[in-house]
Image 1: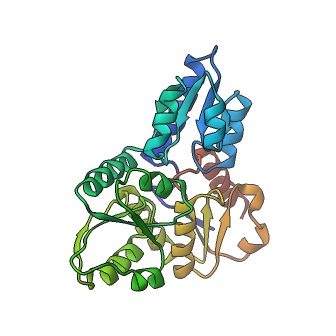
Image 2 (image 1 turned 30 degrees about the horizontal axis):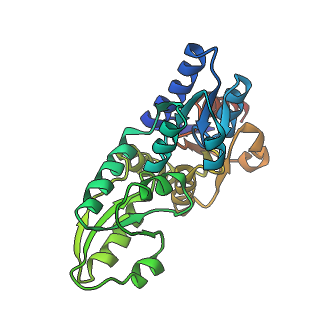
Amino acid sequence: MEVRLAKTAGFCFGVKRAVDTVYQQVEECKNEKIYTYGPIIHNEEVVKDLRSKGVEVIETEEELKQLTSGVVIIRSHGVSKHIYNILEDQGLKCVDATCPFVKKIHRIVEKESGDGAHIIIIGDEKHPEVQGIQGWSHTPVTIIKTEEQAVNFKMPENTKICIVSQTTFNYNKFKYLVEIISKKKYNVNVLNTICSATKERQTEAQNVADEVDVMIVIGDKHSSNTQKLFEICRSACADTYYIQTLDDLNMNQLKSVKTVGITAGASTPSNIIEEVQNYVRFNF
């Protein structure tokens, strides 16, 4: 059996930076309690390992306000501006592991909204990155994910609008939704803030899926970028499977198959990818 692994599968720069930051704090702050505001990345295996080292996950602002000491690490997805204010008010040490690409969107939204623009975020309103971006705007924000939402979006003519995107959004879908909005009579400024690594990963995954009998996408079920990879791969290869670890792989699905493609989300550790790749390569 031939196994084709996508070159960019696994941790992206921002995720690796965030995870490394937490492990570094574990080593440096042995006498302090360490927290992450939300899971540092969307991967249960990584979060579980950090928890075994004493790192606790804070899920809500209420929990944050109850802390009086400790180190709080901002996850790769970033947070709203007011979270930094809470950290300062509580006198907590803040270590910011927000992905630099997400930070750039925060600055754009803060500036553009400060200049009076209505902000549109192309993305998933439930995703923490989008919620964080929204929290940097001085003006109302509209979040658009679907064609219907783009078609139904209405503002007065010549309204100044700034469009940004969730970094992990599907690039082709972003272009399509922007095209719908741009046809309306607004003063539109479009800033493609999809991470270049995301676009490259999506293109590469599709190319691999086009040429194999079975495609395996590895990543946490809560990972937005992995979900997008799965959608893209499934459109190119009908036999596409979404797994978190090797335990989720149904070996019967690989019998009598000549070529298998593998890709993984930006929050999937390399050891999980290698385990799946090696098992498929040496057992079929």
